[in-house]
Length: 245
Image (cartoon, rainbow, N blue to C red; front, side, top):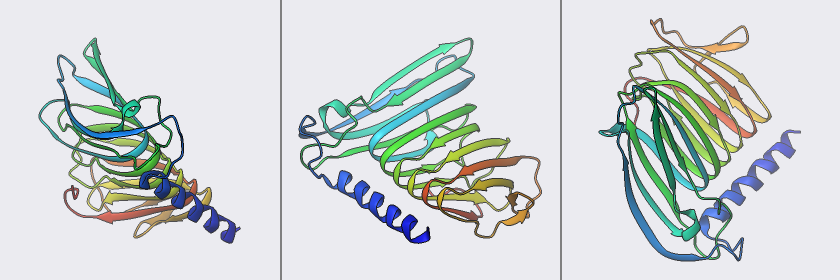
């Protein structure tokens, strides 16, 4: 079983590298000139926001420190991958959607699709992220994040939750295929419920307490994280201080 899991992990990671490296995977997605766009979304009258981010293929960076609700730089060279952004506010609740267009297959040539997103650190946020094939770095510890749902795809993902947390967090991370690293704060109480798929979960310095992993911190807020492994490796790490952007 271990040998089979290792073979599957290697195979899908090579697939991710092939897609991002520009292998010819679909004749109907033609590569053109590289386009770079900067998009900004104003918060408006919203007191809290639910955000949905969907990326089929590419590299995603997500962090805080935006003056507006969203500031994003998008670079792509497949026309159908132009990002779609929608935002509305109803009853003080904002709804933000950032998604890759339906053309989520490979490109004919050397494809590029890179998103660098910054969101506001102050507004209370529920965040849903769905990833396809690629590499992602999610630096979330500075956000006023209440809830996180993350569906991993194929490739490599880093989720950095280190930071000075002011509120509880409920997070659910569903493993995909490849490797995911989840960085957790040492000075905020953490409870991680982890279950493996065909792969491996490394708990780092966390201690087993019944059916959950915990750190030694005592705090007024708690990060509750549920991790369901897929095919590949999920690594839990602890660190002090602010997230490394």
